[in-house]
Image (tube, rainbow, N blue to C red; front, side, top):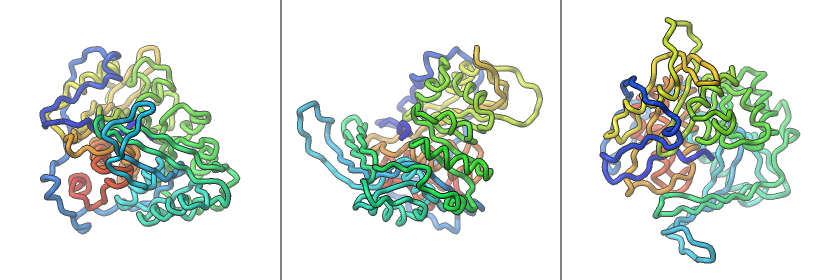
Length: 417
């Protein structure tokens, strides 16, 4: 799971959005101030009512999204404070719910109106049957899931600290894991039928690479979630059209001195990638989009300096997700190279402390919204606040799926009307 994409609790709308620690030490002062792109704020949450689907814009013409990766059964418990070694703690609430990166993201896109298909593996045990039942109830096609007669399904134990609003996850991998021989070529072709996009959560890369190669040969765009360094990740990224990664991955993968310079390095090393997004939790996200259009030759800009100037253009009094962008320009990273593109800074919603419940699955919700946005051909200025809004909604309930919004949720109206 990516670092949870959620805002830190705030006591009032005037709390300050801090410049990310992961970027602050690497950046030189800049002077460019650019306007932000806002979404629309809706009434108090207690007065929200569902919108009619008739008032929304039409769903994307091609709505089939295929996902390959991890599905789990989550056992979630909240405590007043995380226990110290040898201490006992009483839970304040408890929930058993399906989880896993791809399971959560596909549940998200199903609730937004897309038609997700899941490729994964569970055991024929009580947990495996419950995992599939829950996904099917949300509209996820599980007919391509491999069910092992032996072994056990993946389990995850999540402890949520009510005091710090943080969570600790421990998971027990399913056995046996999914292998390339578990799924035939004809089954894959059936899963890919009418697919607009294929998503990989970056786990179990051997089989992920096998599936991705088939998708690549069939000219289906690929989104890869890169959470941490894994064997086979390089090969998977080389097939990607879109990449969403955790805060630590870009520098770990490129050895670049800062996140912005690492993004330049990633686009140079991955010529097929259209954009890379880095999720930064309460600090929002950063996105670098490649430009393939030939325009007026623009001035070369140092990307570290440019990102600081974008942060200076941010309105700290705004609590809803926003987006700030540069123009298309030549972006330089010292000792790395130059790419032509646009840089975006997306902010997270500042969730009041009284409403922030659990950040489990927030990153998966963010990715689910990105998948929807790609299918709907959303512009980045709209896509990033939309994804942040979906992730923030998910943080208002216990578990990775309880708070995932449906398409008719009024909080999404400004993006879907």
